Image (cartoon, rainbow, N blue to C red):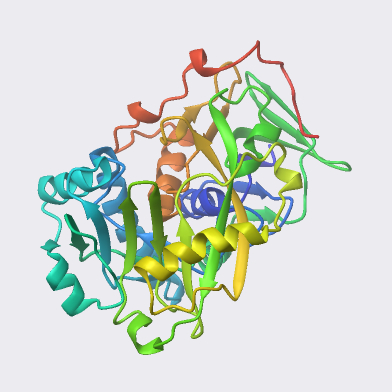
Length: 386
């Protein structure tokens, strides 16, 4: 055996799984067609949101609380700051599903939070404009992460602990059997005991039997220059998520010293092939977003200075698939995090380590189980990567 565990994809989830496995003394081989820290999929863009009062539901809160502990553990092990907790504003009508969930999770788990009226928002955070009937919930344990640096840091720490990471190595063929898994690149082969697939947007390419309700969606982000920079510093401007009828968008403070990142939540189109992501953005898109900026964040210049297109795996429910891969022995996978998995990545890396080593998990993974019924036609014995 070349290793106890192979990890296919050492981006967000794979780097964290490598770190947690290597820390247990498990021998790890990681493969990536790029290198940890790349911005070709969902982990780019300088900042990602961290929050605990969770609009996606209470089942995620234990994972988030553990993730916060592990982010701090990774920082302590490496001396590299990754997580800034400057608060998070969730804004909208208190009757929307997201706002109901935020308040319910905050109260159920006794999370430090505060409900703010429009007047209080105007006094504390004057850059925001709330409409009549809206409120804000301040999640005091929210903030932002540095995604590229976080992935690179976890991967480097995994290597310090003994993991071997194969950069710019594309696996072409995988053969799982009752005794292990054989992986082939163009010019080499490896034999391992277990395989963990954490390939993000490329999962549909790698696992031809991946769930039929798992799609790859395009994500667009834009950066705007403040008219009054002091109002958008991390100290003054918490991360935010806003639900307003057809408008559902989020934002980050000025972490690069120049601009504020804004994103519209949800899909900006289906990506048929992760290798062919269209990273260009049509000018008509900028016109639509200009109206949103002018109405709700008028202290930003309404024309972006930078635009980026990324992608992520999405599921119909918004919940990921985590577990053994049906009908593929010794093979496990984690995918379909639907744009909100990064903040939980260290805890999910721990979950992955439990899965592949047979250890009992501290989390209820039943909502994320990979059921055979979700799959399309019969599963071939081999997995071919185009």
